[in-house]
Image (cartoon, rainbow, N blue to C red; front, side, top):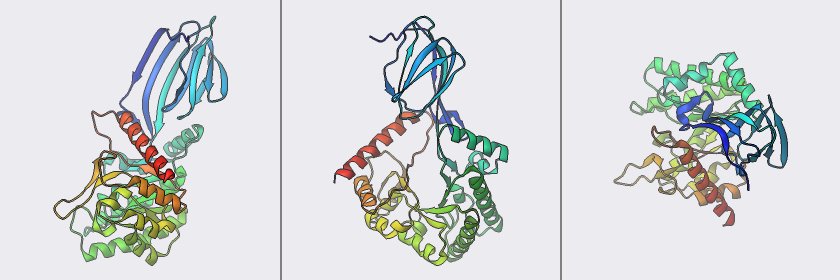
Length: 354
């Protein structure tokens, strides 16, 4: 039987998003001093984990590999790998460990997250270097801050800020190696939508696509919770006018479904332009209810995930899926994310069996 006693074990597990450092989330830190022959049971690594050996020797099993570790050695175990440890009998292990994960970069309405695209070269290259060393690539950027600073605003200063943010985001993405920027499909949000605001938005999309072409970065318009951009077909009207290979669509099946639009039909109409897909649950808009576009637990809304995933598979879609969730203080984000991931994986399994 494995010996799982420790001479000393300090372990501190955090609540996920509360410990956010740039693109990293700190989940766990610990110090483990093993008894002779200490063993852990094999387990699937839930997050990335760096281990540093302070003293002693032991065997670290990672998938089909065995690493003999001693004082001064450092090991990275990636998320999803099978992992266990056996300490030596004569010189038992003592090691520090740190569990962390990456998040897709979000530039939202908060000043804190908006400041990310104003990072200097040193900070950008530090993030890039750390991501490459860990074997993780940040491929997309969620640029939802244009809800606060919309291109269609009646205020010239707000429009100027929108353009500045677009330019900064392109430079930031280019230096970081991000290939897709998801744009919020809002002409305006906190002010009335008018024919003029829609015209200004359209003109801005022509300009944004031309700027994106200079950096060879794809812009993907997200399907939103406003009528201007509530389905892929409405995006295609702009795409057909702009005629740029750098201006495409990033649909959210939850938002499409909440409008009562057939998502399977809509996905088929725009399959040639989809650069990514958001997955979330929503409540459908009705004659007497406005619809709910966020914070609906998976499985409790109106989205036909099996149907959508099956349709995308049949259409030959091989791009990324992103589960969209919101952090709430006092909740266990890790448990919520794991539950959501398990739900989507089950929906995908069922879709492949249909």
